[in-house]
Length: 358
Image 1 (cartoon, helix red, strand yellow):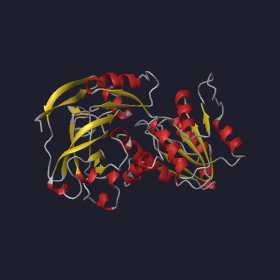
Image 2 (spheres, rainbow, N blue to C red):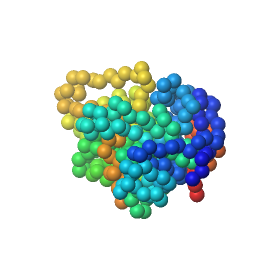
Image 3 (cartoon, helix red, strand yellow):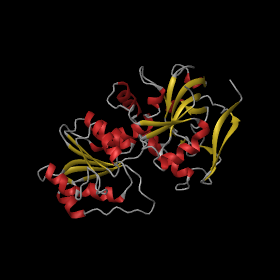
Image 4 (tube, rainbow, N blue to C red):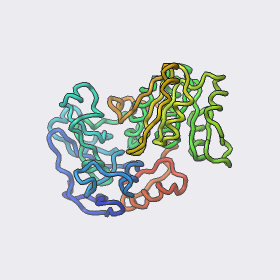
């Protein structure tokens, strides 16, 4: 085992460098993982370009970013005995909950009072090695590759949102936002029994990916040159449902327009799930009386309490195909380039990964 490793150390917006740093030391309730690949998330881009603050004491680095990653156990603490072995292929839940506070005791591990988050408040996966609590480390099912497993974190989040939507057999479901998570939600909605799935977004290449992954109808409300242009989404949903409107709507985007639209296009006894993160000062205005008279439910979805095993089984069973989502890869030394190109949508990315091992 080497004493040092290569890691991309983030200091402050626009400042990150590839450095040789000590390999993490593990406690008895932790494992050390050699990282194979780590996904680039929108939050990584936001941290790097100064659009969001880290959850460190200062809100800045030094910190190793990256929270969507998989790898191989190379060392384990004593509490991993019988659970994980050296050589096991694993994926890490970045939300390292304490499993001891009152909130965790209720099963609400996503809201743990004492949690640390890999790549957000403590060092994460844009490095050759990373450590994780045993309770937040999952062994991969046979047949799931490490590259696929690096999608498990956003997929587990998507599973929780779709479960919050309580989709019934034959339901008419609208998903707003055809990013990687929105495209996973399309596949999950289909797996949970949705009858018709409408995907709403502003970029045709992503809408076309959504059609290939199970969306029955795709709508682009902003680009008048789009073949999927729709000037009035509410009218379109009304026409498709013969005036009944949608049974379920999920916003996989933090756009306030999408959140308001989700409230407008849903019908009687419908459920709206807000998933994508809006800005700190953003306010959603709810049409109170119509929502009450139609007995609507509004739910919020945050992280992935208890849904990791479901996400891994969805990958293993092929219910969610992530092979078409991974469009770009970068070596560790090119992380800044990857963050910049994904932000600027160079090459029409869906999801990019940093690959550390072939």
